[in-house]
Image: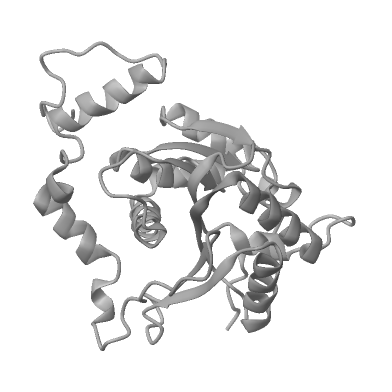
Length: 279
């Protein structure tokens, strides 16, 4: 039986995530659901102040699915991705964040202390490959982590959901992050589940603090991984916040866009009102 090859072994990210792959990330309901669930968990591990808008860096933002989760929680964000096709899809989706084309291995081009936190979904493992003759994974990881450390606030965190190939790759990544001045480590949710197991690298700038508790380490059922919290939040209105796609949620989103000086459609009496199965 032939094993499935990892995407990072097939082609460099800017080549692999072409127009066809990019469209999958905005049209495939399963991909969207998984990306949203992992983004929500990453934000939970980021421990941003509750009910306070923060400025977040989304590394490997792709088509803006993780950015949409940031939007839902009222944060402002900047997204960086190496694939122009993915950013084109994000623009078509009219995401609220600012989008930048860039290679994370060449460093983060932002001023010191710019961001309150950073998240990244399914991108970090790509830095472990040498896609070009001049690529050195150790140097690229260090360059990335050192520039990321610089552009975070002094109490900021960065959380990366990633797919390590083996323990050596985990060691490579964490050693370069610590060398760049970060504290922290890897949180493994549902470690005994084949399907639900997820790796999160949690990095801190303000000193060594205890790592967040992993999910599924007390005999919890792996079937609730990432979905139970999302369903509960929807039922409760995300702790008093407007439900996604409700009239109030859409109006709040439009108001944020206006404050940012972005083109926004005028409100109508139908805003957020369901008609013929669509909003």
